[in-house]
Length: 464
Figure 1 (cartoon, rainbow, N blue to C red):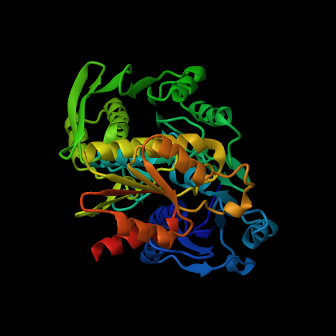
Figure 2: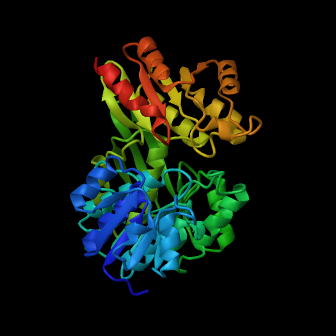
């Protein structure tokens, strides 16, 4: 598709869309956009880029006529800009299609996919290549703490992409990662998630199988052996692959320790081993680092560059991010799947031994607001000493028989030896924590959304 320089982006305020805007500006396109509202950090970044944003959606936003419209996946077919673009015959792409057609030609796409860990893993891969002086490009659905932004055009051959399994647009219901032309792939966990998109685990595995089917026959494929469904997808695809994990894999972590001094392990692979140290928390992050190390060695990155990158990599915002490190420690984490919740609480226990852990959970995602993981979420949260549930997001839209029950989860957690309470108002939840937390406690906020601004409320309260 031949594209002119004038590009309009509908729903430009999302993390991915604002990052794409930055890449398009770096390529020399003239970009503008629209959204209902745009908040920091996206609003700050778009202002820095000089990208004008119109508030609200209207056919008039496509005046003057752009050469291309990029539609965010929150936009429906009856959106006035979607309707106007169709009527006027303006070429329209989803976000991943725009990446595929405008950013990836001539590059070597390195894709990181999986139900958990892909943001941190993709960020570390970009950091390793940057540390090695290979000037990669990247597109990551988060805010890496060591990279200048979640995106970069780069001047090198490689382009790192976080391979999202969520759908692409109202006219493009396949996973985003099917547009990314992988020349190499790291596959982390494959588990059921995104209940609004996928029917069941088999449906999830089918999408990942389609991704593996896009790999060239000799392309590096690294699969996490700690997740049986990931290995099953790779095995059934017929692709050649290597595994990484805690044990029983081609690449393993040995002599792993995680404590106040940081994360330490030996990465042992075919014919080599080397020490890795990192300020990140937990075994799951050791696994994320290991998968990147294994791929980086296949790409010819020197061991010392991998080691230097690991020692200086501080992860991604909202992924086990220490927001307050004082008498009471406050950690903000994106975990919402029971596997990720359990891994985060395990990591916190290891990094802060002997301290009381208070977990605040937000039943917000389209999976966790339903009963799909009712018992599994409670069991995972029982890894904390005290658990506080916020209100189920948009609970009134769910039938009670299908809705996650914080009260049931509280009873389950109590039976496992921890205390739990459900609080229906975000301000009251923050006040309860501030009233009860004591010096030495660790407060972990677990949410994939705003959670009523609880992190900021706690941060301000602890400062007082």
